[in-house]
Amino acid sequence: MSLGRGLAVCLLVLLASACRTVSANDRETAAVHQNLAKQSLSAGDFRSALGEVEKALEADPGNAEALNLRGLLLHLYFARPDEAIADYRKALELEPGFTEARVNLGALLVAERRCPEAVPLLEKAQGDLLYREPYLAENNLGWCKYLMGDVEGGIAHLRAAVAVNPRFCLGYRNLAEIMDGLGRLDEALRLLERYGKECPSEPDADRRRALVLLKQGERSAARGAFLACREKARETELAEECLRQAQLIPEQ
Image (cartoon, rainbow, N blue to C red; front, side, top):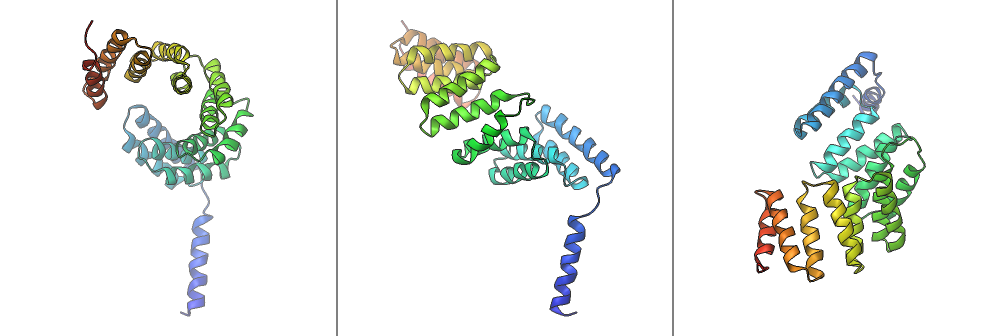
C-alpha cells in the first residue's frame, strides 16, 4: 500500500469514528452511567464517579452534561485543570447555552488566575435568567474583579451573591477577606460571624474570626475562636494549627 493511500485510509477510519451515529440505546446507556456517577459523587466516591462518567462518554461522546460532570470531577477532585478546561469548553461547543458549564469554566479560570478569560464568561452567565445558581457567577465575578484591582466592583458582586443566597458561606468568606485587607475589621468580623452562623461546622470561619479578633486586640475572644476551630477541625493539620495559635495566647 502506498503512503498516500495509507494516509487516506487512516483519515477515512478517523472520520468514521468521529461521526459514528449515537443510537437511542447509546443515549440510554449514557444516562444510566451518568446517574450512577452523580450518585457516587454525592456519596463522596470520586473515583467511581469518574469511572461511570467515562462509561457515559464512551456510549455518547457528544453528551455535554457528561463532559461538564467529568470536567467538574477533574477540576475539584483530581487537580487536572487543563483537562477540566478542555471538557468545559467542549461542553459549551456542543451546547452554547449551557450556563452551568460556563460558570464552572469561569470558576476554574478564576482559580488559575486567568481573570481576563473568566470575566466575559461569567458576565454572559449573568444574562441567563433561568440559571438556578446565579450567586456562583456573582461570587466568581466579584473575586475576579477584586483580583484585577476593581475592589468596589468586586465587593458589589459579592454582596449581590449573598443577597441572592443568604446562606452562601463562600460569599461571606470572600467579602470578609477583602474587608480585612482593607482594614475594615468591624465589617470583616460581622461577615465572619455570619459565615460561622450559616456554616456552623466549618472550622475555617472560627480561624478567620480569631485572626481578626487578634488584630482588634481581643486576645481572649481570639483564643476562644482558635479553640473552637480546633474542636471542629478534629484530627487535621488545621486543628493542630488552631491549637498552636491558641496556646500562644495566655489564658486570662
